[in-house]
Length: 285
Image (cartoon, rainbow, N blue to C red; front, side, top):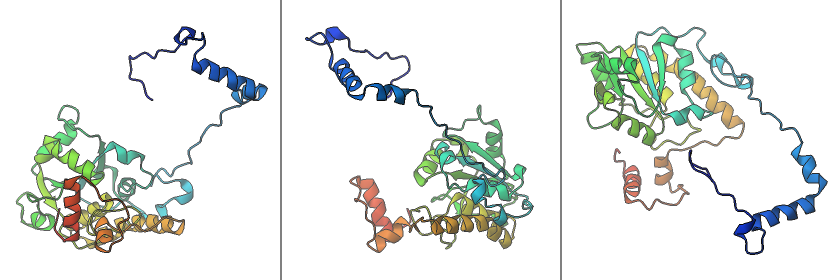
């Protein structure tokens, strides 16, 4: 059990027991008698330190499974700048895609901001970007326009796109609890592309990973379909490697529900249960 900072923990003493010795003390004496000198020898054994495997400085993967051969030789030349707003939990994921995305682009064209709450005081650069008329935020919803239409019809050519990196619930939390993300024009991708990030479960067949969203968005903004193919290449290699070494292909929750393959208990929460029903009936959620 964790103790809150500033709290004290009371240790029972002999007077806590009617017999003059407490249960914890008796148990400790019993263990000491049973283990004898062997217990003392275990206490002085050196603790083995855990060394992390050396990582590739470019793709952030362990050097033995480096994906640099699948990255472009030189960073892609693009005019659009990506601002990735990343939930802190994504930093600790082993198979995250943002490092691969960043490795495909120049450093000044892919910037990552990690956090849950983003205010103008703490993130002045991000706030300034949100206020710029040339900024879009990629987040689906009823108020979001098609990115492809926006990029061709707007009078101010978009120069920056904000993408939220996290699970769907984490992304929703970040979007709705940070007012600065309501400043840019909201856009979404209208695509039939199925996610190739098959080692993680997606809610629906057309839900894409952060890297895939960025690849499609940049291809639209730069009017260059080759960009999408180049950025997806390391993701395809990552998934292929993981599957070859025992990882399972993860179908979307939508696919599992429609085909009777969903093997987890159905949620008792009515709101979550309703979402599952909408998935089965092809209703956008």
